[in-house]
Image (tube, rainbow, N blue to C red; front, side, top):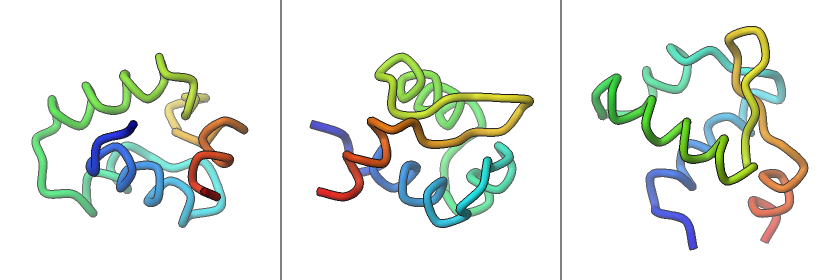
Amino acid sequence: MLSELKEKILSIINSYNRPVLFKDIKDQLNISTDALKRELNDLIKEGLIKKEKGRYALTESGKKLLQR
């Protein structure tokens, strides 16, 4: 089960309907840069998001998880 913060990050990425910059995510959260980096790296390891050309996007697994 995902933490509330990770679910919020996935929702933010999903709301853009395009790959998102780190700054776009950070601007909507009240957490430190290091904390956000840690959460994003965890989500990448869990296969829920991917990073391409410095932008973050949901994977198919991430999209399915949000549809629940």
